[in-house]
Image 1 (tube, helix red, strand yellow):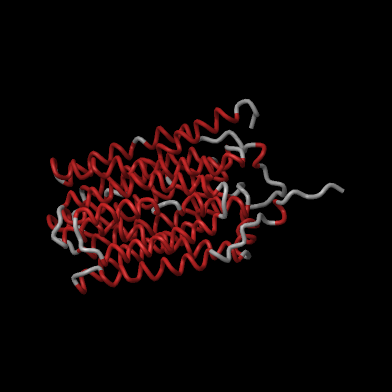
Image 2 (cartoon, rainbow, N blue to C red):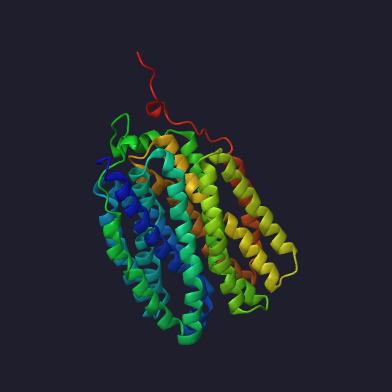
Length: 406
């Protein structure tokens, strides 16, 4: 990469990548709003709807290593373009799904694969390679905050469309929003790696995987990310229905998701910046411990519009702060050449947790009429994730460390 062109290229990738993540995650966070109106109109069970969203998260995670490898090999621009097309097709077909099977194919398979190509692994890989190492923490924090802004912006818009025009028209509108990611992909096309981020030792993709799989830190981060996925997707998909079941309004559920998105902007950006100054593994432990504490307090307090709003704001501060910290640790320990692919593998664990969290929520509700069991599991898993992140060795591998002059 030409030194003079590097800042301009990095800025364009950061800008367009942030907008893509904002659209991708913002649309995805509206899906919980469709649970009750769609299941009631189409006479589906909550488990059927939850399975499709669970499958979406599984396909998102399973596609992550593949789209990450493709982005590392051929550039993020081509991958984001294809992902945007798949995403828009999936959302559009959601509106025409008349059976749970069709809904699983559209909302689950197509949208899930679209998400794998338009979110953190691919965009973080492109941004991580384009910027100088000293600016990486801030840049990853900006991308993470952009995803939160998308949630804050699009969740109220989705609720407004559902309330005024119905869920079918709302999905049609979101289809056009998803289609905007395809032209934005042009701005994520890479021109090379920032000179300061160049690898010291050449590696193949297979060698990078074998190296990571042999490192304890990689598996500890992977396990912690599983818990993150379980918690946030269970809450994102089922919180609107939870508050409705307890006698509050649909607007309360919408406001909760919007507040999560709003406060997540500050939380993700703040934790991303903090990761550039302090121990990332300790910050991750703080997030997971704090999530469990917030859930406990939420369940113990009398439920009201105010308690839901306070819970949403507190969870928002802790929502996706794990993302720049976890991806930052992967880059810090293993380097950035295969950052998208390695982050994709770690993120697959996140999505396994997401699959289990959202689907288990539907199953447990259909069996017991309540979400209590899944809330308790979320609390226990948060404590576990905090404990497994503490032993992570944050030091770069020996091949990335500066060698003494001979």
